[in-house]
Amino acid sequence: MPEALSGSQILCRVLLEQGVDVLFGYPGGAIMPFYHALPEYPGLRHVLVRHEQAAAHAADGYARVTGRAGVCVATSGPGATNLVTGLATAHMDSTPVVAITGQVARPMIGRDAFQETDIIGITQPITKHSILVEDVEDLADAMREALAVATEGRPGPVLVDIPKDVQQAKAAWDGGRTGGQADRRPGGQGDGVYVPGVAQPADSSARPPTRPSALAEAVRLLTDAERPLIMAGHGIILSGAYEELRLLAERTGIPVITTLLGISGFPESHPLHLGMPGMHGEVHVNRAIQQADLILGVGLRFDDRVTGNLAAFARGAKVIHVELDPSEIGKNVPTEVALVGDAREILGELLAAVPPRDCEAWRAEITGFRRERQESYRGDLSPAGILSAIDRAADGHCTIVSDVGQHQMWVAKLYPYRRPNTHITSGGLGTMGFAVPAAMGAALARPDEPVWAISGDGGFQMNMQEMATMVQEGIPVKMAVFNNGYLGMVRQWQQFFHGRRYSATPIWSPDYVRLAEAYGIFGRRVERGDEVDDAVREAIARPGPALVEFLIEQEANVFPMIPPGASLSEPIEGEPPATRLVPA
Ligand SMILES: Cc1ncc(C[n+]2csc(CCOP(=O)(O)OP(=O)(O)O)c2C)c(N)n1
Image (tube, rainbow, N blue to C red; front, side):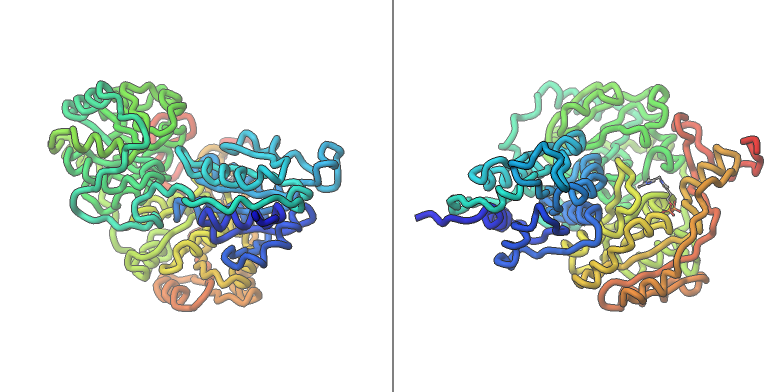
């Protein structure tokens, strides 16, 4: 005799069946039946956030680390709308987040009932898929579908909206299914290490083989090009193609550029690694792009922060685009050869077919463009000094989650990522407030190493309430606040392009040390370079969450910078004259 369960119980059972172990959420009227059932399922750990936006970002951080869906839960109306920024963030960066929202009971839908919003309508453009569950009989399969759609193919957020009476209604439990969500990354936890040797071929049985003519053409181009580059994007991390990328680069001698979301997809210290391209990319990287005759783009969408003025982007280069989502092909740059499919599989195919070469002359030319960066910044209260202290203390074992702004660019460019998927940031949407909650998700998924949330004083104040969540739930996020007294990146734009008119960018901060202490968290302020290493070590040594505020130079800028709309060949490399261009 099949068991009769409530919709809420069925939901919990499916989540467990599908391997979900953590939920980030916040209760309210329309989701109360689910919260009523939850204590019966201790295998589902619920993390009570302090704002639903944080639930979505935490689920996103968890998903980025594990490759499995991160799940967040909210009530109808304001609870659901508070998820929107987090879902849009996950959508732009192709991460598998599943949002479960309560909805008003079916007879009330469409009547402007208390806390009714059309969350499916609101989130349609920023979700991969959404489902309103209108019948309890459909609930189990709807939830399975949501988790599958979120993780399969190009990952993305999915929303499941469940009216309160559907959560309460009873149905026969189908007994469960075997097999959980897809996790395409080798190493399961997305946590592998770079190991020398031959990559295991990826399982290519799930898709038709790459069109032989396209593969042959790509191999010909890779063999004949004189100035080839590989541009590696988020697809490397999403597909776990670290080994294939490294081996392909080593076999061909082609230098590798990693986009903001591709960072940590290739070892920073590898001799073939060039750095980050685009608006704040290194000058030698952008110069190499402009002089390349071939770009092998892997798992990226050639967005405007990467390309600058499209009309002037890499005009001498043919493009081979390896991409899972066919709608990305030719969207921004003309493509000579499209290889549509999983990055790991296609790089494996290229690796098997491409003859060895070394591109020595081209690499020597690029080396000529390069300015060596200082490797050690001991005792220095600059962003580079702080990041090198974090690296020294972590000894290669830490994950960095950055917020959005100047510090994000420093974190992208200056930290020596050694292991795959150890750099997490909101690239596409550029969501301030992301770091602290996303680091909570990452820390739960990666309990064996410090997870740092690095924020500016602006972004930190957007979600600092989550310190309470960390304390209540024992989530040991280490927080670094780069306090420059400004919304730094906007201030920099004002300095460069608005005649130094600092409109609405000076930002007051509370006393972060006392704030941390009010939450029962260790806090320390660093005002001198010789305190940096000690503070970082102390934060790591303290059990649980910890906060270190670094008082950095107030008007430090991120260099180089390509002005918005300019080409990659037009970097700003130094301070602009301190003139007022805007009439007072
Ligand atoms: C939610 C949100 N609002 C506004 C912006 C626009 N924005 C981008 S960077 C930035 C300044 C960030 O300042 P802060 O957090 O102090 O970091 P800093 O740039 O100083 O390192 C702002 C306001 C944004 N990206 N996200």
